[in-house]
Image (tube, rainbow, N blue to C red; front, side, top):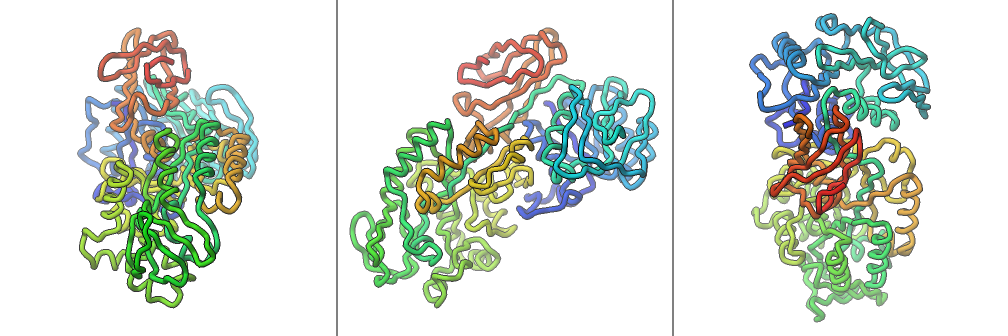
Length: 567
């Protein structure tokens, strides 16, 4: 299997931990190895991390290590591992990437790379990875230059000074970088596409990878939640009507889009009949403070005679599911602090936003002091099974408030992804966070999101459409489209994309592409897979359980994996 090997001394990617990252912003120096790992997964490749201190590690003979990344100061790598890596790149073609450390590592001289202590800066990059292009930058770019040597090919220059260069080592290619590339990805949206080019065009092997350019995942939070009834900031707002939901469906259809609905399955009664009337399944009920009802069965009529029809909402969403326009995921269970008795007795239960956070530190302490069957995640799972006939895959924590323990419980209960401002994907039984897939609000469209070529999650609330009208949604979609986005997916599709372990088996006269994805269905979303074959006229086939499907392939042609396997 094609594999992306990362060598690191980072404690963040300790194999004993079941959470890598924590969902908050981390500086590039702390998450260098983790972000390289998640870049590999974004590209659709299997990734492996080993420690710089390894003295017994040996490459698996059944694995093709087509990429080797030194995600650390090269001086920190054990001499045994240095020898192993040099043997690997001597025996088989590979792409080795290393950056400048605090000083020139002793084995740089073996490779023929010398980094200068001199720093250069500028607001334009001269790039010659594939074709020569000049890339203007929005802000100044800083890096250490590489001293020119025979056989070295500059890939990126500032003011005619090379800051990234390539040279050959046997059949392998070495890339020297005069800075931490993860830091520059954070600072410059223009830089990540260049890293992708280096990983693909500079690699001496035939490759396949996922192309996410222009992809926006859509996420609507809060349908089903009782928060609009109780929280004063939503005073006198309404629920979306069936007609409005159908209009949303029409907008999705017009953009060939699919929407994730982060739904709240548990509706909480405040017990205050003076504020409104509560009906369950069409019948008025006695008010019980802290009682939780299925959101799908609720009709609430406020004292101002505003109807909150959750039954109609549920039925409308079900229609859109049948039309394959939306996918329901979980937004906690109640969107409320789990000690509902404390909430009902609080004098500020309608004002304090902290009451509407279900998985914060205090909330988790309460959850852990109660029986496992009362865990909000356990109840959310049962509700999704009962009312949506599905197994949820994505958790959106209410208010983006959650602890490490909440993440561990989400993993234990079987979710595969956490969507917050950043995203975590379950990979090899752990959650791995990436800061490259961000979640701006849907009306925060910006050309830089497109330039970066990473998938983006655009999130919003049902409240936005109730307040501004459904046209607000279509206007936002048009503005993202004007920025260059044309692929609008749901979060489950994004998750599936991170489960590929693409392997291109390069045989004489034929290349066989193996998808290696347990979640991918042939009749599902047509992922855009780019393929580079060293022999350009070679026939490409896509491996499938029943047969190998013919695809005529030219260099770097975008392959759409369709239901019938044709391009």
